[in-house]
Image (spheres, rainbow, N blue to C red):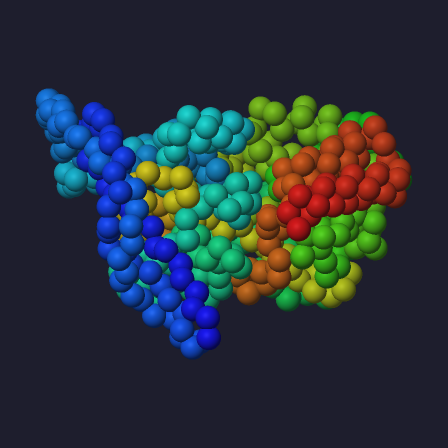
Length: 510
C-alpha cells in the first residue's frame, strides 16, 4: 500500500525580549517528525530531510521593569445593606425596631456590619432599579412578598446551595410556608418569614348600634340566623349597617344614596386589581392562566366578580366609590380607621393600624364567606428575605440572614410586622401574645385562614407583570370612579390588551 506522509510543523518560541537582527538562508539537513499511514495504521517516525533554513543572529535586549507594590488588602468589615420597602416595615415605629436590631448586630460583629435602608413603598421600584443600574445593589431584601419577587422575576439567588452547605434546618417552618417561595427552575429564593392570611375585619360598635349580628367567628360556621355564610349573606347584612345622614340603612326605601355617612362594606381593597376574583371561580386571581399564556378577563368568573364589584358600589351603595373613599378615608390613613366602615376583607398586615383603631372603636375579626361555588378561599400574603442575584457579598448576606432568623431577632421582626410566624415555635405562642395585647380580638381565626390558602397565589409572577397589572388597575379604576360601568366591554378590552402583552412576552421568550 502506498504510504501517506504529513509533516508536523515545528514551532519556534522566541522570548519577547529577543530581537531578530539578520537572517542568511543556508541549506541544511534537519530531523523532522512525521505521521505515516502504513497498511491501514498510523505511526509516528523521524526522518532526515534537507531544507533551506533561515539562521538568525539574535540580539538580547534588556528591559528594566519597575515593580509596582500591591495595594494593601481591605481589612475593614463588609457592609451588608438590607433594603426595606417592598412590604411593611417602613413606618417610623418599625424603622426604630430595625435600628435596634442593626445596633445589636453591629455591636457584636467585627467582620460584617449591617445597615437597614428604608424606601417608601411607592418609590421602591425606582429606588431599587437605580441601585442596580449604578452597580450598587443591596444585599438583602426584607421583608418582601410574592409580588415583590415577581416584579424582579429571576433577579434573586437560589438559597439551596447555602442551605445544603450549612445543613440549615428547614423543618422548623410550618407546612406549606417552605413552598411558597420555591419557584420551578429557580429554586428556593427565600427563607419563610411570616404569612398574612385574609379575613373580615369589622367595627363591632357599628354592628352593636345597628343591632346586627357579627360575622361568624370560625371558618365554615353559619351566620347567626342559620344561613350559610356566603358573600351574598355578607352583602345582605352590609346593607343593614350602611347609613345615610338621616339614619336610614341601605335596605330602606327611604335610603338617600346622595348622603351616605357610613358604609357597610369596603370590599377587597389594597391588593392586585384581580385578586378578589378567586372567590367566584376556580381560576387564578392574577388575570392570566396558571401557565401565563392566556388572559382570563372574559371568563364567567371574572365577569361575575367585576359585576358584583360594580353593583356593590353603584346599585347597592354598600361600598364607597372612588371619590367618596378619597373624601372619607384620606385623613384616617385606612378605611377602617375612618370609623365609617363596618366590614373590610384584607390581610393581617393591617396590624400596624391596630393601636389607632383601638383608640377610636371596638373592632374584631371574623371568618371569610364562601363563594358561589361553595368554596372558601383565603388570599394570603407571605413575606420572606431574599438575596439579590447581583449582591456583591452573597456569602456574608447569607450569614446575616441566618442571624436575623435566629429566635430572638426573628421574634422581634414578627412582632414588628404583625404577621403570623412561619416558625412553628413562634407560631405556638403568637395567638397568646396578640390576645394579651388586644383582649377580646378573635386571633385564632387568623391561624384557621392558613388552611384555606389559594392554589395559585394572587401575586404570582406572570409575563409582563407590571404592565398586566396596570391594565387591570385602570379597568377597576374606571368602575370605581363610575366613568365606565359597561363591565363586559371593559373586560373585553382588558382581555385583548392583556393577551397582547402575554403574546409579546412569549414571542420574545419562546
